[in-house]
Length: 431
Ligand code: HSE
Image (cartoon, rainbow, N blue to C red; front, side, top):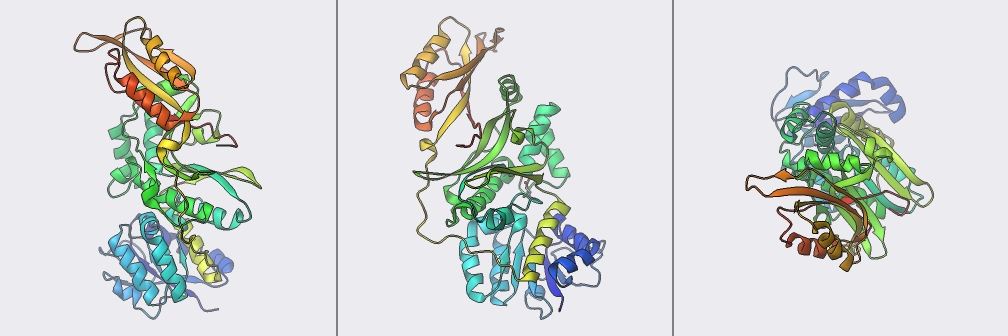
């Protein structure tokens, strides 16, 4: 058969990984694809003479790839939104298949772009957009295609996991851990996308749409980053038998679909809580299989390239992904309506009766307490007021009720600073 001819757009970390992997494993890739997969054209804003392009024609103009007659499939590894969107639209117009590693592109524009691709009779694939080297798009769209998915919970941003792990195991500061993740090439160009949870929200919206056959709805994802997590919270969580992970969670409930990204206490007995560094891990709970766990590197040159090359092999075989679900979009469960357990850190004046007043407010909202830690040694602030952090773990409660209780507790004279609140998920069969 004729080779599959690839036009590669973007020669950064992932693009260079694709060049390397296609060269390194050329013969096994050809056998699995049923034909060889060769890069004929490369476009990048900056020439990279140090990268061996094995004879591919280089240009600084994307158009030279999209319009080329010797390109069957355009691979987008540039990142960003506007230029990538234009490239996908142009590729579709030029009747070329499209493979992308771009989660923002798919999360924000995938619905319309995949529909256009379908009309144009070309394939679009995006395995590298979610969880790097883990074949999670394939797991949902093929391996588990016979299942009804109940929920998904995952560590889907490597940079945030790297930072939380470094804070927990080495006592690293947030800033140092982030700098190290940037130096290793894990972080986004703007690392706020990682630490504020936006990158995870992009990925979660894609997983949710695939799992529940719904339209993409990035705007409906509730998103909290890891910026407020302190070393103290990590320590208290450990004392209670939990680890703090930044999770993306999507769940089908009778009220609709939940989609949320936030720091979460996970019991240390769960495998997910043990996943450290840049590693991603996704638990899928479905009717036929029950829980299955997918774990591996979530970022980096070769893991992402592995996903891109898998997509190229699928394109070579003619294996198209189904389109995302069509309208109407299902109801989305607002964050106020979710049910969760909570970790609370309440900075309280060191005087008798504080705990009783806090417990009374929680009890008035029918929120029961599972555990409490109260440091015996008071901390004396600059003002001279002695205070102690009171740590409470609640049972499951509707978030709206918890918020109401927290507003009342925050107003107590005994509470000297802002209360920290982190959701707790046990990841049992029922979520
Ligand atoms: N910045 C992303 C992460 C890269 O840290 O997970 C992979 O999508």
